[in-house]
Image (cartoon, rainbow, N blue to C red; front, side, top):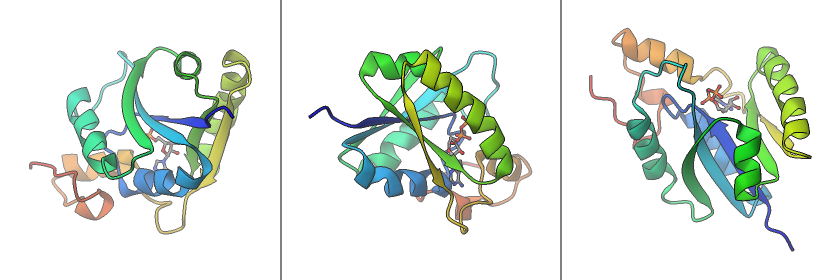
Length: 155
Ligand code: ADP
């Protein structure tokens, strides 16, 4: 039978415990999960690409079915290239839903049937976002409670 491969795309600027929880909950659903950093040359990031990739490698090293990669251009084309039929995304609130709905419909068309599997964030993680974490870090606050232990921010 064909392997069930899911891509979990994102910026992971930086990865948070919310992302990790999502991947852990998706482990039983897929044979392989590829956590993939989308490279968008027009977007400004707080952490360099290499740093974000290194954190992902460290955080997911303990999960044998999870690998880490990065891609340029369209997520749907990346999925097709590597033979992934599923995308994994998290939903924290209604604005996530509104945004994700259109993207998932587009990916289904462009990716010729790629299905996006959504997991609703657990209540204890639904307030966590990379955006908030970045604001805390830039503001000089301690963001450790939102970050996996392996993600150490040098202040
Ligand atoms: P993007 O740059 O594509 O928004 P992110 O790195 O911010 O990527 O997030 C990647 C995915 O992880 C998104 O589907 C987002 O909804 C999900 N996600 C982020 N934080 C959480 C969380 N706290 N709980 C569940 N899902 C989350």
